[in-house]
Image (cartoon, rainbow, N blue to C red; front, side, top):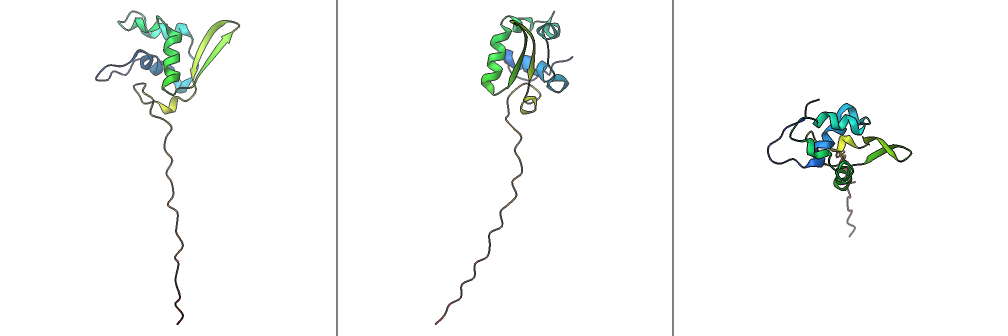
Length: 111
């Protein structure tokens, strides 16, 4: 998997968001997330994975945590369509609103 590189600084949680968005928002285990960043200079993003998940939620992401008892077995980004390709929250897609036809009013003047 390749990460999208952009100009400027990308926040740590945005890097993880890009990983969670892959495969149409399917669940990713913490080990799968670690494998993407292992051996790179970005391996530090996994130091506090739960904190980064919290920051994704603060930005507007809906993250489902999959657990087996107390152990976290996976994370799933439910609203992955509301993020752009670099992991930034852009919100839901705006629907086109049909213009409302206003009825014509005619006045009749009686003398």
